[in-house]
Length: 366
Image (tube, rainbow, N blue to C red):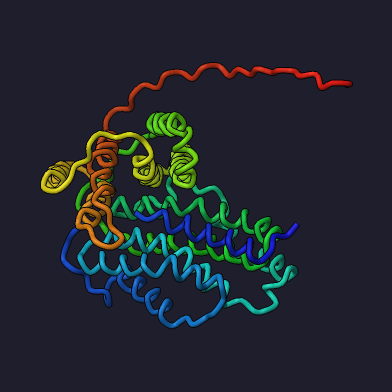
């Protein structure tokens, strides 16, 4: 049974919000005219300004993405290119989905047209719907660019598969938006290949994070109880969704993407549990300086860690849309997890054998 248009649009708004929630260096200010990252930010900024569509879906997407692109541009102009790329990745999915949706003919927005378009795009995306091999982005540098690209690869299949039933059970435009999002993930992975440039250090020695992922999931499950599970239900869902991605990427051998999603999951979860007193003011700045020095001492590509340092410095500055508390979480919880990921894996205790208890209740008169 189809949902009403009002409920369908609400569901789409939730999708837009979840994508925006995935948001999370320093160098000379790049030249946007010569840098693909700057050029892409400028392209989407212009699209936001010039698109005068009155469609409700576009209004929701614009409301969610406009501030993200503005902050991507700000980070870029401050020389924080990795942070800018992270924000561009988050906003680009919604913007690409909207652009794709608006470019379709009126016939595609009908039930029959949607089904035909879904089949057509299945052929277009055929190569990218396969399970990506561990070496799909081998050679892409620096490590943080490869990590973002690896995290995008499985999303092509996830969005495409979800689009059919979503469109059938809500309205065609909702399914079409998902198809556009699948295409956007494919394009972003290709974009990461295009902007690859030699790193100044060797590749990082990444390993499986299965043990760390298990432990973090255990923490999440322990914290998921009233009243926190009721008051912060959406935050728990987003945290666990990121951790689920980390687990799937790890199992697929996509270690760069797994590390990125694991750290993002830890960042989202940290405010949901009781934590010691947070760093602030000069103490926070000093700690970030120490982490900077620790990263510089690493003999391998440290760009994934630097992404989170730059995010922390951005948040620590305060102001609209920023949270010094988030900066403290990054410095005291997330970045220590980053360094621990390069230490030998901690032995994982064997899981208890599965046990099922069945209780039979006899209903009266049966």
